[in-house]
Image (cartoon, rainbow, N blue to C red):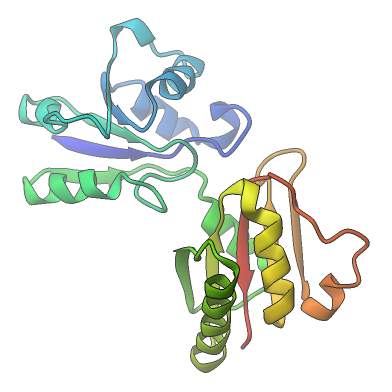
Length: 222
């Protein structure tokens, strides 16, 4: 049996975000492991699945999440947005499926991290996703300096994310420390913006603020 890693939209409708072949595969599945049952039902219902007939399990509940696979049924893994197991708790389930000898198949769909890199103009041959940086300003700016040094020495793009309500604090720290920055916000939405500039030009913007828009940050000192 197969565990399917199913991407979900960053915004907009599933039909716009996912290819027809992925949607067809999702419609053949009845068992799903999800982060949030309510939003998962909304996603699956928008794809035309009979939501009341599905078996939906939240990933943080204590249960045998691989049980459908053991019983001979395919299982779908859903993220809240983007690709499962990338900046997402689904990686543990994927690892468990491999340990148990089940096949894992990723379906095609949006990933904010790779979309941001594609649109940044930064080094795309060597890059690292660094997750969340420290919350407190001194530690955060120390980590940014460390990533700036690594980017310069390894000639790689450093990619990271932040909780939306701390976006502007993150941006202020980046403008104080690094040299070249890209911020990709609201990817795939009508309000999408990707701004990629030297920090000297960022500082000249009328209002260098992001607000609480889902964003990906990239720095490249190479």
